[in-house]
Length: 247
Image (cartoon, rainbow, N blue to C red; front, side, top):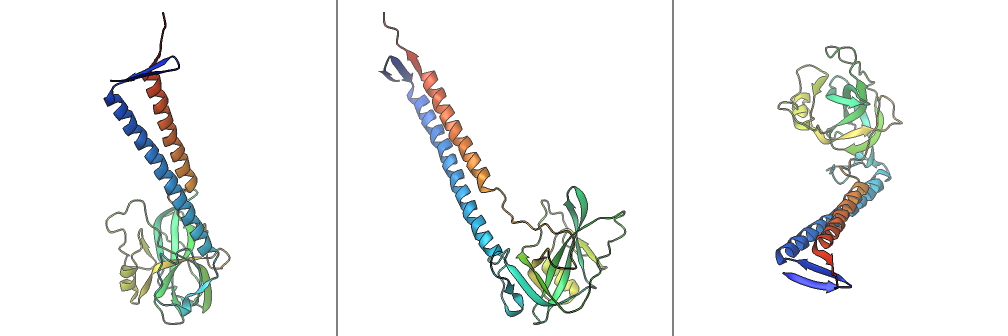
């Protein structure tokens, strides 16, 4: 038993109770510090991503060996033409609560490099799933501008969701660039270009920077953990103390 008095208040607790308090206090404070660290990491990541977004457009026609993770969100341009006979619809895509598709069209660079899937944006489902939307586009040689990104990833991947159908445009729920390349008969890059909102031949485009939890939320979580540590301390003091009555 640990016992001492201070300013007319007696504090009394068992060694086990003190050990339990210190353990929980350390755990709660540790979680708070961890959340602050995560918030700082996310803030740095967002700043780095913003630097990439604001960078000068990279001409992919002159590039080889693109690393989609290093150059993610980097503005790019490439000259070539669309392969309008072989387009891809990513199914089960919602925008403002409405069902629809993301339209991805292969773009063949003039440099002879692998084709690149250009995400032209979101289009509504229409009256029936049996009738596919009209996604026609010009094949004239042109320069496409956009930004590099990974392919969209569903929250839940169903078996066979990446297997393209037999007729074009194909509908899939997950993009597998190798499977599509096999169907197309030519190589495909393992990333997409999200078409710039100022470019023609696109649909609704609301490109975002993906951060699972923003820095502000991490800081809010840290405040909660530190608040719990403070509450635990106040409770422990209240339970372990009593006034000394002098006769």
